[in-house]
Image (tube, rainbow, N blue to C red; front, side, top):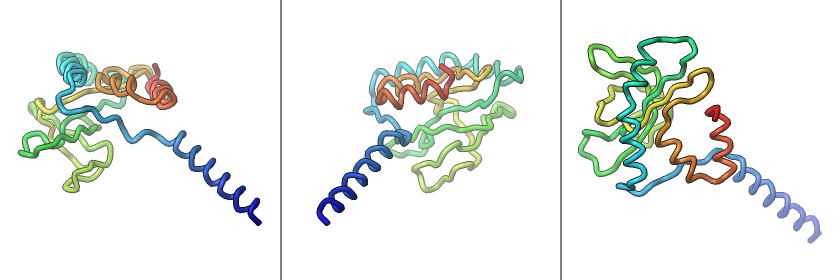
Length: 159
């Protein structure tokens, strides 16, 4: 009986370890004010004209345009929440999108329509011929991820 209990515990532990190993990462957290993040965000903002030009061109090789922005920007909160928005458009100089994932902020839900302040933009991306463009903060996050998660991310991004 003790051998069976030990076997059950061993199998349970093995399944738990496999689940932890293969599940997607929850994300990489950086300290507020991390200079590497600030540099990646600055590079993303400086290269936004490439994003807008590709979006305006509407080349069929370019798909899945998204912006990452601080959902808390301009709301007087003492924290940040960087989140991706999809379905990006600019109408009369106003940036519109839909939240691409579930936010931590309970005032919002995934797929909610949002207006994005240009000053809140942290990163941008789109796929050109199935290869991700942009992703400046994402690249930094990949560099700081576990090797197996980094490899999965690079593969998904076509790198």
